[in-house]
Image (cartoon, rainbow, N blue to C red; front, side, top):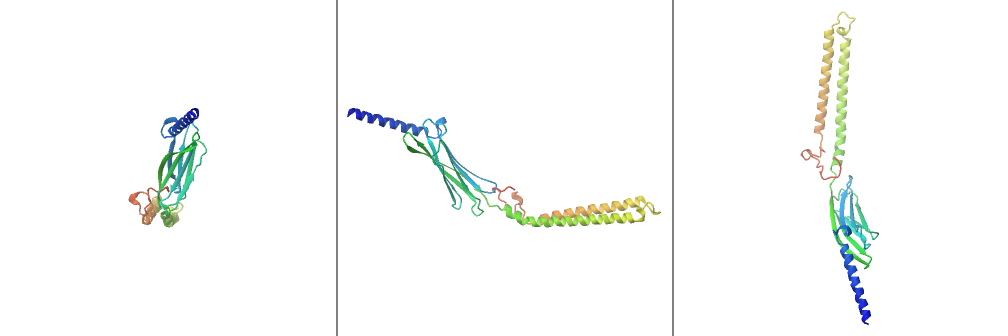
Length: 246
């Protein structure tokens, strides 16, 4: 009976030591044999939100298995729930929520980290990590969609104006060439007068072209809304925290 009690006591001590060892090596920030746990969240250029929860046992003598349960939640309560299961010393759970213009703001990810110790066949809770990512309303795309047809009209007006100026210039040059003072075979040929006529036509054309450019710039300035991302000029509230490139 005394031998049986001694054997039970020895087993209990061994089990307690293994439990203590498994627990210690699973604590975070213990160097080479510690557990690394974290959460992350980010967005892509289209405003879609991704998240990850990581439990990494790294190198450990006691063959711990990693597990992570990660939940990504939107401002309006949409949820992406992900569970890695046990499958090795590294576990990753990836979340995803597509962009919704009516569901913008801070997206939160929260991850519960676990280790499984095969020596005592026990789950060991490693704690929780969290992170966040922000999405914004895409005001730039609707603004530009509204502005684009007006820009096309300004460009068309510029092309018409410059076309008219060029046609008038060509007509003025033809009038000079058809005048007797530009015809060398004509007794009334006058090179100085001919050059003066040509220069006058060119000056008129340059003035007209400048006027066309001025009208075009006024047209663009008159277009509303202004979709510039700079706060000083932002009439359409192109949000600076938006993931949509300007």
